[in-house]
Image 1: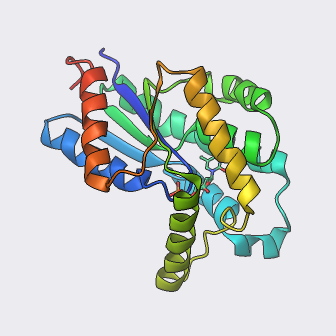
Image 2: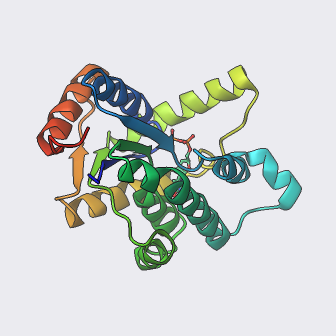
Image 3: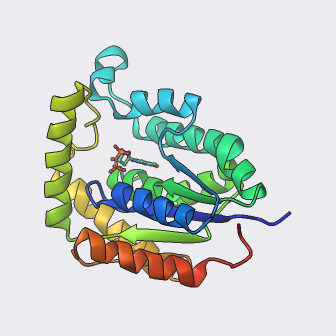
Length: 224
Ligand code: TYD
């Protein structure tokens, strides 16, 4: 059975990766490819419950602050479920899986942001995810200033429109986001084969074109 192709999207909050993921999915489908999309945390019924614990700042009123190691473990519980329920079955069926965030996010946010260290995250990945690595990671890394600004604007809008409050991470200070940014740079330098970094602040359409070029060059023709 042909194995599919596993692509993850990474970047700081507000880097525009969700938009790019949707556009790539639409393009691949228009090319006749079978595509499965998901986001982390979330994407499964269990994952959506974990997501609301992790991201809703109001949930802290119920259970108090989440300890950094508990946060890490919840991210990986979510990921393990998504691998089991969605990612592996889709890859085994020969689909292209597009995942909005994956273990690089844990390395950046929990490893660097919460200062748990990369080694612990990578060990957890090996233990809980059987070390399942993406075939390709598209890392959208705009300047720190512009990604911070976009994240804050988006968060305010979400709270106003939907009455939801997924802003636990946006409450963090600029140093937290600086560490995340730097961690992504380190990951990209460490794994240039897997990680394609798109560093500039080009417009949405130019970034979309770049992503198509990168994906077209990497995607095996036999994947359907
Ligand atoms: P989300 O609303 O999906 O944000 P974005 O559109 O920026 O991806 O929220 C996901 C948040 O969870 C984001 O702030 C990053 C954080 N996160 C981690 O801290 N660790 C992880 O392993 C993952 C997957 C996400």
